[in-house]
Length: 223
Ligand SMILES: CC(C)(COP(=O)(O)OP(=O)(O)OC[C@H]1O[C@@H](n2cnc3c(N)ncnc32)[C@H](O)[C@@H]1OP(=O)(O)O)[C@@H](O)C(=O)NCCC(=O)NCCS
Image (cartoon, rainbow, N blue to C red; front, side, top):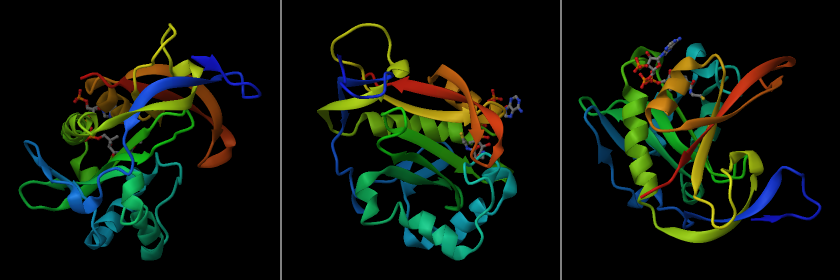
């Protein structure tokens, strides 16, 4: 691993792997069925369901936006980030109930380069379905989908705090973070094999006059 000249001291260039981009297009992604869920591509018809999800204050409370979507147009702009032609930049899915087909949430990789340099995962489901193990069921299946994507060698700049000791090729990882009081999200991550590697405090994006404690998690991709 080489230090980057003129870069922030906590960033390093590493040799690792990443899923080949473009990622499979929405149209080519096969739905995956779990015990209670169907995990499928996001489609334009998800607008109403996504709006219901994103207008639940409890759901949006832990979102950096910190408020519900103002109107359907704002939700449409969010949906567009995961529809063609943007689908080739992400690996984000609709979380649906197997029994009814109802779309109750979204989850997946919504950005390939997070502030830590690694891809980042996120998820949200409607409040009526919280604490039933749904997102854990989703995440465990999604991690298999992510792991099975074709890979290529990559050289990327990452935050040194994400790394374990040692030089040489670095095992690929995916990261995320949660506000410290979002215990549900942290439990999902721990149950799915993520580990907390960093806790820090910064201005709260939802109200920059106050600080918030955040916890970052990483998951190493092993076959
Ligand atoms: C966070 C969220 C994704 C969790 O989804 P979920 O389907 O309810 O998660 P699961 O049921 O799989 O697991 C949640 C776990 O946290 C536990 N939990 C939840 N709130 C808790 C609390 N306040 N204290 C202790 N444990 C808590 C649950 O009991 C469960 O653990 P268990 O299986 O050991 O009983 C869901 O609440 C959500 O969509 N929230 C809004 C969006 C969000 O916060 N996204 C994540 C941003 S980082």
